Image (tube, rainbow, N blue to C red):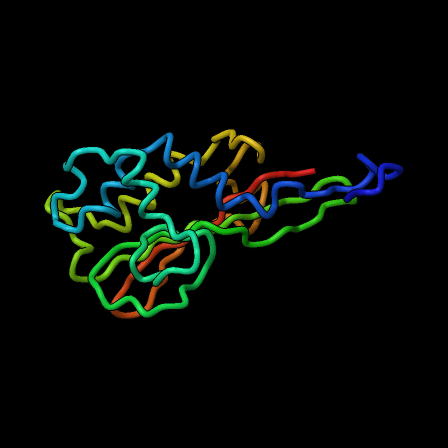
Length: 182
């Protein structure tokens, strides 16, 4: 518990340990395309019916079980080997750069990985690029409850970027987005 004498004098980053959950909660309420691209693995996944909240929730790894059976993760890495052709996203805190004692730049990393065999879609786009674009559209400028305004702005944070990643047989994209937090 923070010392009440110093309350407001030092950044506390109160929601740091909740960031992944807050972002996934926002994603559940504000996008359908990403969830379809995670759930349906066929080439026309983007055109399938929207998922219910229960279907979306069932994709989120809650710990304990075989992680390879889930598609949405609240941290980087996965303890179990994925042997299926699937697509996953990971949303997790990346870093904090304190600017002074009262505020810092909090960076969050959003990752998407897809097996090469299912990455190309029937609309001549790739699954990872569609998801990366949607992540930018859903989160850039979004006001995340409990966290604040999220931005993708290299002038505001030199950490912000979108890059290619992954390891065979999964290719991916990852991006860093930021927020100024007390």
